[in-house]
Length: 122
Image (cartoon, rainbow, N blue to C red; front, side, top):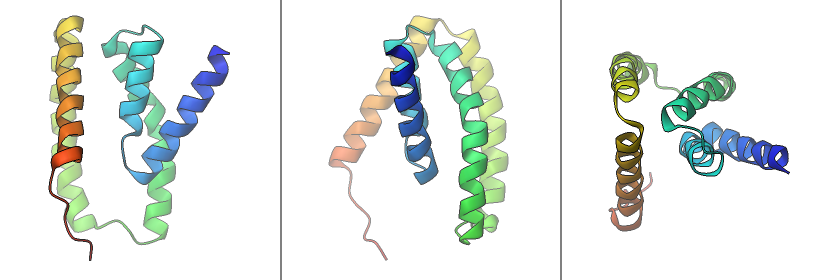
């Protein structure tokens, strides 16, 4: 049963990541809450999981001409540097504090989704 749940969560996370909306959050929640995996280990698993998933989604987005390289290249460069720094910080933090920070982040994102202003679609 545990394996079936893991497959279902992995499938849902993959679909969400293909859409670019929250697959990593789902996977982190599943690993840290339902499998008792330490959050720092769950983050590493999450990153490894999303290497092939993001590559597959990126191929599709490039094929459909939905990648603006002029914006993507500097964003990817900045994101890479910040990811390196944040990963170093997260492995240095106490696991309990890391869970609290992650929980606060999830609450903030949820509140923004519920009460934030929506941009008009083009």
